[in-house]
Amino acid sequence: MKIAGFALTLVLSFGLFACNSSSQADKARTEHEHLNRSVHSTGPEYTSNYICPMHCKGSGSDTTGICPVCKMDYVKNGE
Image (cartoon, rainbow, N blue to C red; front, side):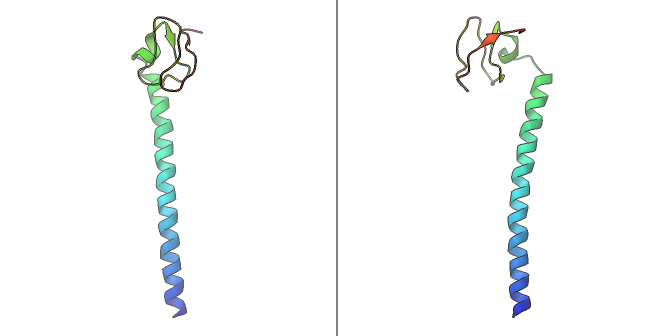
């Protein structure tokens, strides 16, 4: 009986760690995609006169303003 309890605890613990590592993998993938976006800088979040410092997708303007995604002030592109 003790062995069965130990085996069940071991299996449940493995399940918890497996779910946690998946979350960490998703976080690493998201960070990699952010870095990859920096290399492929063709959208308005990179090419407008005023851009969001975080390069939020779809942000950017020809005039000063605020990013609709993260609410940060736009900065002059090239600074």
